[in-house]
Length: 253
Image (cartoon, rainbow, N blue to C red; front, side, top):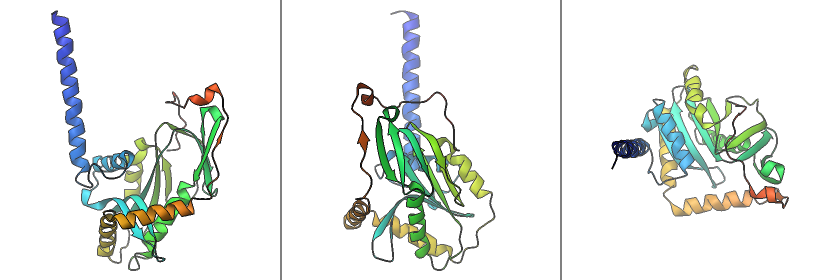
């Protein structure tokens, strides 16, 4: 066996061991907030970015089920309690081109260079509904700022996204830490009762352990999403392909 081959094997083994170590350490970080098997990978990635940004793990809440005044539940991906207010994350995982604005009820996802089109509920409106449910559950904190952050994972490309809503950010994952840092530079929020917020979020996370609550939320989401426009397809050889990565991206954030 040649010395060069041995060196290559050693480097490969060290590289694999290092990657395993990094992954294990990331899992340990995430488990300070949530079980590693709970929710989607992209949601846990948001948590990891928040922890790397220095956010206290006790201030991060994952996979919350907030009860609305009508008794139904709404599911929030990630919520963070900060000195500047509350940050509510809506996490999406899409490929292709994304089109939409804050006023359109449905946004559009284009795949295969426009040969395949899907519609999905406006994530700005979706997260606004989550924020409304949170506000309604915090009567002792009526004026607290709540920031809406929509994060798109996957190989999606913002093609025509416009949003001028206050305290709303539509971003790629690499901008999570920057947006959180910007929010934290804003004036401290005037809290009525911080314990009310922590109690609400703690209970909302616990609700996610109740199969009946989870099932009822899924049923509600299915019912309200029944009128989503149908996807359209153009059958061709090209429609078999999907967008991969892009060499150049116009970053919204």
